[in-house]
Image (cartoon, rainbow, N blue to C red):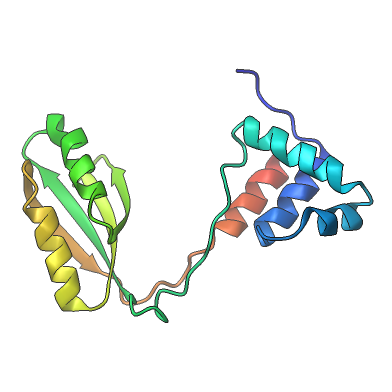
Amino acid sequence: MAKFKLDEVDHQILDMLIDNTRIPFTDIAKKLLISAGTVHVRVKKMEEAGIIKGSSLTLDYKKLGYSFIAYVGVFLQNTSQTKFVLERIESIPYVTVAHITTGKFNIFCKIRAKNTMHAKDIIFNIDDIEGVYRTETMISLEESINDKKRLMHTIFNEL
């Protein structure tokens, strides 16, 4: 598949969508002095090219009662069990991110929980998965930076 070429208008559209995924196409069109139809067509092309993959919703987990964050490093008995273990981890809704990694852990997960007791239950669920040798947990004291927008703006400015 050929690389999709972004022009200045595409960049401007993406910049606005990065800042507010819910901004109406008519508002983007007014700011860029183009038609809403043009915005729609360009966004559709970027979606078809796989540059835009949906939009996201940001929640305040603290207000919802899920302020406890921990990172769980998973050691496997055999690396051949990675896919099986990941499928089981994916069925635990409180595991919000999982990476296959090099180094100390085979898999590294981020979990969200209500409190330490809830986190313990989640970690024990991971421990109980067949193929998991053991886990090592790090508790987050505070999520200081969680800003994908800065990275997205930087990437688009480098293109």
